[in-house]
Length: 168
Image (cartoon, rainbow, N blue to C red):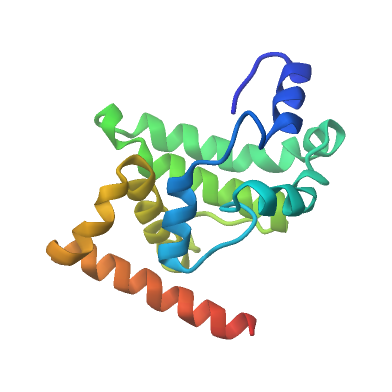
């Protein structure tokens, strides 16, 4: 969400999820991939889990973190200037999202094109499937008919199972 007036933005965020519910397709895709959590939660679950996320999202906390978000932003600008067409923005924006999320929430500095590219590619695969499902929920059926989609989904599910074993 992007708004010019900070107060309007805060009002919209705090009013959520009532007038601004989460998209069902995000929940469905997360369920399909076995990665349910606070970012896929709907209605009552979202209300209960929201304090986990919003605690660190105050104006002061975000302003203190802006310096850590600059390296990923510089890499995003560089990636965008390298594009041949505007239809190729998904990959650089996905990488930026991964980098800023890791930096902001975990304090982990990663470079999706550099030394971290080998393990970040698995997260990028997950982003690809999530984007496909949110933009076109019928895309989940491609895994039954298109070999590339089937292989991608199998890889993501295998990695999700591996991560689940580690967490337990």
